[in-house]
Length: 322
Image (cartoon, rainbow, N blue to C red; front, side):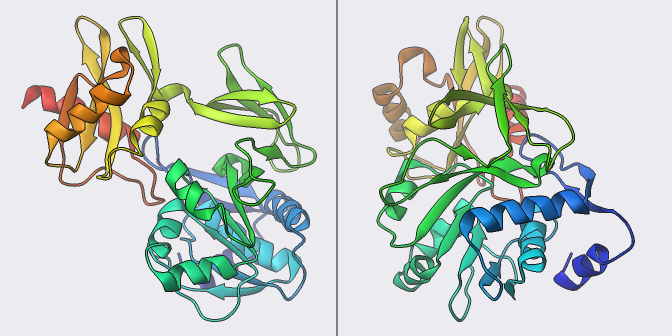
C-alpha cells in the first residue's frame, strides 16, 4: 500500500481501517481497527512528545502495518509536515526531522556510516519499535543529544502504549505506560493491558513481564519458553546473553526431544559451528546450552524485521528428518 491508497482509505466513509499483524509468531493476520481509536492513540503520542503543528515527521516504514499507518495518522491529527520516503533497510532523507519511527534494523544500518549516524542524531524524537533493542545497539544510542525511545505495543493497541528512554539521564530498562493505561499480570506472569482509549476491554498479551513502581519490563514471550527436562528456558534471555559474543546472525528455537520433552536449538548463518558451540558452552548455564546447532543460509525474518519464530521452529524440526 502506498500513501495515496492509505489516505483514500482513511478519508472514506468507513469507520475502520484494515491492518495486519506483524507475523512474528505465524502468518500475518488481517484485522479491522476503528479510526477514532487510531486518532486517540495519535493524540496521546503527540501530546507526550510535545509535537506541534508544522513539525516534520518522517515516514520510512511500510504502510501495510500499523506502525506506518500511525505515522500518517499522527501527522493528520497534529498537523505535522509528513516527509514520506520508500521503506527500506537504510532510509535516507533530506532536511531536518523532528519526529521519526524506525525498526531496530533501520537504526542499526544507519549507524554503520558517519552520515547515517549524523542523520539519526539530528532527529528530535526518535522512537524505535517492532523488535528487540539489544544492549549493543542501546549503548550506541546512549550518548545521542536528542530523545531516543523504545516503544512497547502491538497491532491490537494501535502501535505503542508505553515508552522507555534509551539515552540521557532518563535512560531506563523500564517502560512507562501512557496516562490512562492500566497494567496487571495473569497468574502465569503475562502482561494485561487495559487501555480504553485504544482497545475495547483488557488485552491479555503473551509477554511475560515484571511490574514495579518504575513501570514494567518485558522478560520474554510465553510462547517463547522452552521446557527442557523440567527447566523453563526463556528464548529471549538466551539470545540476550549470546548476542555480545556472536556477531553472525543467529536465533534460538526449539524442537521436540524424546528424553527432555523439548531441546534448545540454535540456528545461525555462521559456518564456524565450533566457535558458536564454544561460546555457548562458555557463557550459558549448562541446561540452557543448545543440544543442536544448525546452519542456515538466511535466518527466517518477518517483513518488519523480527525473527519469524514459527518458521525457525519448523526448520529445526525438519532438520531431524534430513
